[in-house]
Length: 151
Image (cartoon, rainbow, N blue to C red; front, side):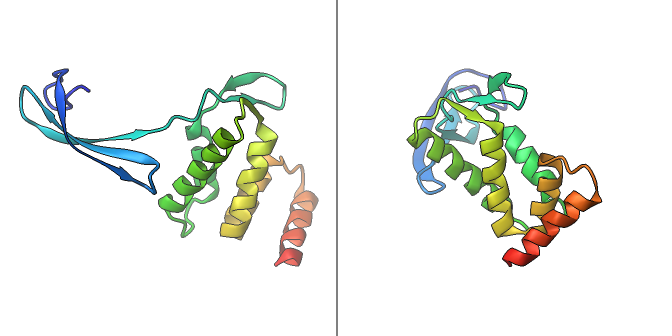
């Protein structure tokens, strides 16, 4: 691990503990050159999951893409970062447990929509309008009507 202050390569671990419901390991480190102390977090990487897009092309799973889409839907809503991070952590754990090697964007989108529907109706509609590519106001109205009937 490289020191963020002096860029020296050798550091020692002073303390380690599990955090985030045992999903991460927090380590306090100290640079062996300048004695600067800093914290790192280790997290199990979602296995080499491949995402199958609508046009059948494949790309490596990128957590940041899901996070970005959810945050865009949740903009200016009272939704905590912790709730979103926890949801994505649980998704990745589920996929790892199921030993998925490939997943379709449709499956990811549906799981995100289910999460947002329970969390915040406005965020759900925002996400659904982009994800389902509403073509006109009628499609939008139909989705709103489904949402109000289910609540």
